[in-house]
Image (tube, rainbow, N blue to C red; front, side, top):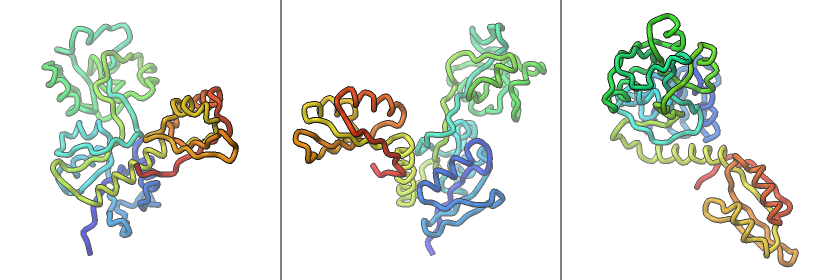
Length: 284
């Protein structure tokens, strides 16, 4: 029996549900019971291991597992010998500094400040790159309470909507430390070969399906160039003659975001019978 490729998947938290959903959409088996720690997908030659998201980069970096799905912030914070292969397009967050409203702290640099964070490795690396020095306070969650409780001057944390910070009387400042999202990682210097290539193709196909829609429309030959300029597709649209003289049928792939506005623009350009279809998966 051929050795199975071992892949780590988040077992809980913000990334877990979407990671499993993406793997299912890509044609891989996933667990039904959240208590299962290992699942074998013999048809695809893979064993999936369900682990704490923060531990995944460590297992992959040590070579215990071949690949993993985790957050970019967690990979960089771990310092593991692992590299990002593919951004997966979900779990997007920003890692930012925050301070009490009106305090002005941090505007002239971070030197001497106490910074509370759950990402000491990531933040220390950021500070080292900029030759800045600060005292880092390592906390495991609820970082926004650190200032009120007197253990920190400012915080550095993952920010999604900012509502939690606002309730704590804090405001973000400075440029984002990191733009994070779910990623596929592998051990640095490793080459899992064909199984990895297949996984990347499948996941990329799911990403395309989520980010794009297929648009079909009819348009007069005289208006074809204007319509194609609005919806050029990835490698050019497919154009076929219609039975109606002087008219064409056009099929093209367009970004999902903004497709309603695009339909309005196509209509104004002379397109008719405009149809939008979801894409389940793709190979590009």
